[in-house]
Length: 161
Image (tube, rainbow, N blue to C red; front, side):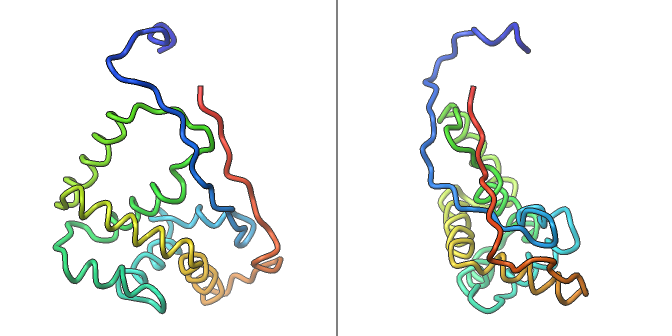
């Protein structure tokens, strides 16, 4: 792949300057590790789909829209909102747009509906609903937090090329 490093491309390279929300440590792992590929994460995703306390906008989104594979759609929206961002990440806007359109199509949504789903996920993340549900699910399964929930924050930083 290194031989393509200097290949000129027909679109502009952009660097992000997004606000990165601090991550939390839950049971010795960053909270975003409890995603759609874990039992804890799948349980949280189902709670969000069914309108857990504070997650009504997500519940109503899934009532209004026929989404193919709702759990995976919500899990991917959560990934793009939570785990898919790096500080000073470089990207091609056209490729990013295409990627999001493909994700929308995969779940039988148009791009506007996919953007709405991602906005609802961002709201739930900012309000602390997702991490609260993760913590509650861990506690329900008997996994006690070794340190207070709010006491650990981690930086989610990266650098672009």
